[in-house]
Length: 379
Ligand SMILES: Nc1ncnc2c1ncn2[C@@H]1O[C@H](COP(=O)(O)OP(=O)(O)O)[C@@H](O)[C@H]1O
Ligand SMILES: [Mg+2]
Image (tube, rainbow, N blue to C red; front, side):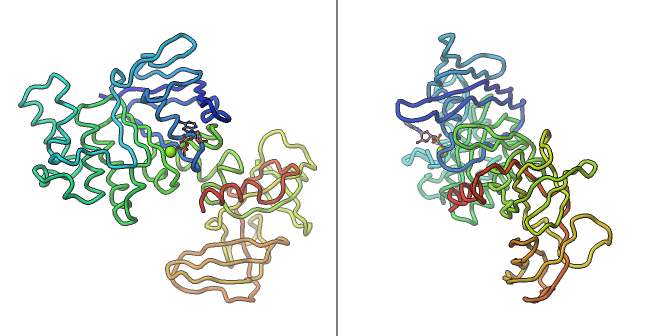
């Protein structure tokens, strides 16, 4: 059984400081997985805890399956127990003195479930997370990844309406983390439960989410499919946080069909995606992903072809990272493949596909403002 989650104008202000969650609204459809992504301290956990009922919101409303569970203005606050949500946390919240089976069966003890039904549900949950063969083991004998599978089985065994996951992979080593990450989406989809998942890891967000909501400073900046987030980031922060690390500065000079034309410091002009309502002469910053820069000979006549000099080259085996002097600045470009196609010092042509060059209002903000904010949090 799964159900819709609706969060409207959610606000949470702790006694100390500025709002942890600031007017956040979103809807998760029944059976959908939404991932909240953002740097540490942006309000992900607080949002999730408000949905669970563990935190009392300051304002706004939350409804699960059409039932309002929190609306402080109307004096409504349903207790966590009565919300029927499952939760998985970063720390493996398992009972150390119990076996795997006892851990998973635990939530059913307080619910009116017959013995036979309990065995069936526990068996089903263990099978789903791949722990059928470990049922009688003491939980402390398991690896971190397996303990997190136990926690997951325990959170879905009573078929909650909604599953909340707070950085469940953060304590695992890299290898286990990748394995469980790929498994998690399948497991959640097989149960059909509606899920809200929070993480600071963009790769996790992309693999797991049907949609991703990018947060910063308590605000939800963009909520969209992974493809949209990666190909049409709503602002400079989203672009930078998801890896569009190259920045160019320029000024708008005109329009080229669907694209805007921007002139950079060298006088060269490029076609870019421009936000609506930006008149000529506006200062802009342009974000470009290193993976989206095409090197070498391409089609003649395509827009945004420029001369570049290979300033440095870093061979990574499966890919090469190039540092290019181009358009009066430096751009990083990544080329897939094991061969080295361009030597340091050589002059090459590069193509910056207009649809993948995103301009945002430049203002007087110092170059790299948003980029360095994102870099700080990723460090
Ligand atoms: N119990 C609390 N009391 C005071 N401030 C808190 C509390 N919990 C979180 N905060 C603050 O709220 C902001 C958001 O925190 P949090 O939701 O934990 O962010 P995230 O999960 O994205 O790292 C942070 O500035 C944090 O310091
Ligand atoms: Mg958190």
